[in-house]
Image (cartoon, rainbow over all chains, first blue to last red):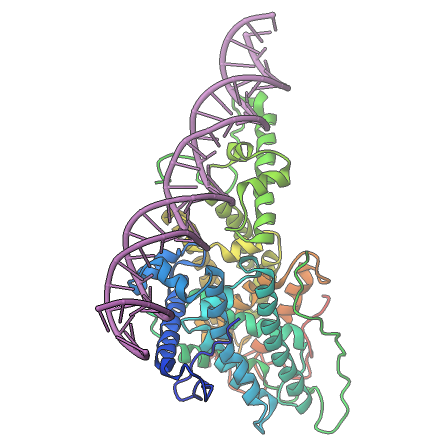
Length: 247
Length: 247
DNA sequence: TCTCCATCATACTCACGGGTAGAGATCCTA
DNA sequence: TAGGATCTCTACCCGTGAGTATGATGGAGA
């Protein structure tokens, strides 16, 4: 599969094989990428509006003012469209998870940073696809891929919670369930948020982070999970993977 | 379109008038109701497994070991099936909202009671339909109905939060956003919970309520939103560390 | 000017699935 | 035991929408 990137504004250039006889076609190649991105974005917007199953490829083509075969020229199937939209949304969260590792902050604040990005991603045009791309709608291999990406994020959040309990910046709680609750609250934004709302995605994300922060902060006078140096008796919860779908 | 027939507007089952000349056929009537419920339940289970659009009426019929026209004998359309499943799930939450009004408890505890029922409903076999019945998949009139029921619940939760802030049992927060966060976290359960999980629906609901409760409780030493004239019931922090696990 | 290739449209194929027609089977009442 | 109501079946219709075959267009290189 093509390893398309969501083309950040000032990001790195596409790696150009230096001594290719096709150098002249570079511009064309780039043009194609742009169009392809437009197709995926159009798909995301349509899925947003009407849902995956209620959106036909003709709808997507119409939004771009082209015809269906043109769409198929840039993408191999409707399923792939959904997948790409999913990846575009989720990539933002993954990179937030990675970057946060470098920060020297209490875990609760690092968690906040991740959740802020998470919230903004869910409120973005790809939010719907990110949240609703169900394994039922995808082939086995793509479904696996989606699940592993989701699981990766889930594990990152759990880890941050655990660390927060350990460093005392988060009050004691069950990391697995708490992660589910946080992610669920954010994911759900995609269900009620539409572009024409009064609040921007960033504002919503901020509001949610504020709520979470208020709820997770350790409470004065109550026992913390682990005093800075004391070996806390942590609940050794065998964290299972993301709920497996049987069969 | 679908609004031409005065078909019994789905909702509660109307108790048969006592002195009907058709008393003899009561049993039959009852039989029919039972079968109808079985159809709806079967639909819910299939939707659960494969999603609404990936489930055909043949699938539902097959689960019941009958054929498609039999299903249509009890229900007028696929859409109606989804709607009925939705209502079945949501009714539980609505009744919880009503009942809780009678309780003489701090608002936070009443909220907990509602959220517990909410969580259990979402983890039930109708949870998927309840949470995923999108307006996109329903006709205009049914969609309106769904939205109004959802909104009613949302308003109940917001009201409880407001009351909690007022009576000092919940620390100050934005009721609207907090309600979204709580409902979202619970709704999301329907995405990852499947019957074959290790935890029961009730256990999950309980775990979530515990998390919420910990996050919403007022914090010792911090200002509460309680009306100044009345003394806020300040629980000394030596109270309980975690919400009553088994009481 | 000719040719190759990328790009896009017209005009299809075809399976799936929601929904129906109409007839058989079964039970209740008279 | 007829006659009607209830229940379920077999066999079909047909719209929708994913995906395709094929050919037109237009620009780049020779």
